[in-house]
Length: 442
Ligand code: ADP
Image 1 (cartoon, protein in one colour):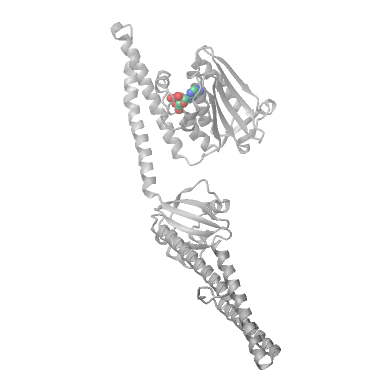
Image 2: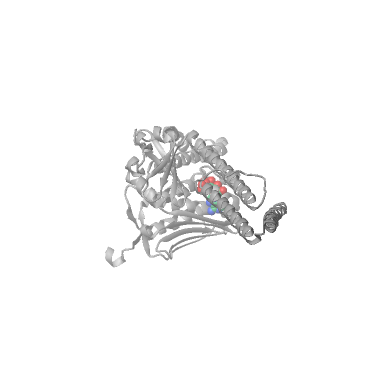
């Protein structure tokens, strides 16, 4: 509203000034008897003055000069005032943005991690902070360096080309010192730039290794004393010590649980130490499914209805020993967490993508949805008392997850409280092999 009033006033002033000049010219013209020449002269002067203002304004704008913001005395002053205001606002915005950019840069500089701005196409490093120079190489700051010049490892090249923003690249040797281990994380900074955050994880990895070694060593050391205790308990006949019978029974149960715990811990340590499968053999699924059926029957002791179906007609590629241990764990869980008269189904079938799925389904207690994401963590239990009662170690699903990871497969869990659970091991097409026909084998 105020702007419109100012504009109206400027128009009024300009028109009044024009009329005043023309009227003055006409009056003077009347006196000297030359009205028209004087009117023409004053019109020409007014026009020249307008051109001069226009020229001055255009020159100032072309030369990006600072316009003076004079309080309005007509249209030109008003226009200059408006342009001056725009200039001031633009400058203030630029100053604010510059402050923000400087702030971000300062924050990136102060970050303990190395930060690099990398072009998506070509991989040229556009900017990096001081930590990047310290951690990677001094050359990283000088103009046309490519990220592939800094990291020569083919693993980094593939990771960058794939634009892997979900999974960080772990345990990468530093270019300066291979003993320094790095983790690389890629963030989509803009449509044509990546932000690469590099962190020194040497200490973390060392601690992780220490933890793994500690667990493996303790488990290993516990094996011998446990075997001795087992041995003595086995030769102590209950009939010789009838008073101690309940105690001996409990001691046997507990020492067996401890042995199972130690064995599971050792299995986990062994699996964690492997980055990939050393050798992939053909896992003959028909005999493996027969073994699983036998194990399920033994674990169930006739308390459940058990069915095993082999509809896939293919074999898997991987480690027979590890896959057997993973599938057994699932079957054992189904038997332990399904009440008497429940149903346990083991199914091996093809997936539409060309892969295969081994699923163990039960009609047991089921698992509340909030527990599902954490189920494969070590020692995670939905109900501690039920798990203890059933003789579990809390490591079964953790072992399953590790085995499947090594095979490039995944574990899908669906469950409903009171109806049962389904644990599906999903294998990709590359893990599937044609099963030799019986006649071929003969
Ligand atoms: P545990 O040795 O205690 O069974 P797992 O790692 O095998 O350890 O399983 C973790 C937890 O997941 C179990 O304690 C149990 O609460 C839950 N769980 C696993 N399988 C089933 C199942 N088939 N039905 C219901 N709960 C299950």
